[in-house]
Length: 105
Image (tube, rainbow, N blue to C red; front, side, top):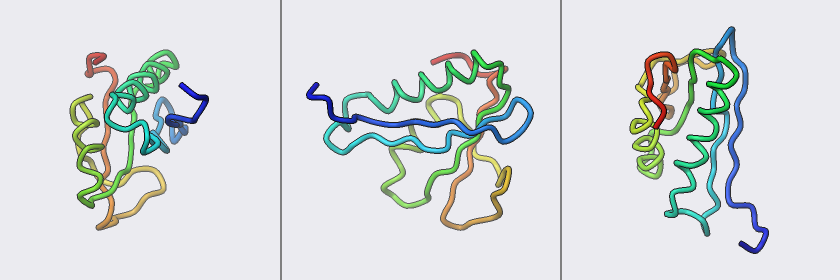
């Protein structure tokens, strides 16, 4: 690689043993290489190492978010209602993963 930033991911604590994937992005030049899956695996491993119980995330409803929603579903995330400081939002999809029940992927 040429030193370009390929992607980012961040976790934010939202409660006791609960974290949120606050951001996860892959630079356009690096998409389609499996890096999003690697970042998601990395951040879920970190959550497990930290003895977290539940991982939440919020993503969009627009078609451009379909690949992200598929990736999250493939990792065991399921749709849920708003969590933490979020309220109902017709432009958002809320998802959660119970780490105690989810096998590492």
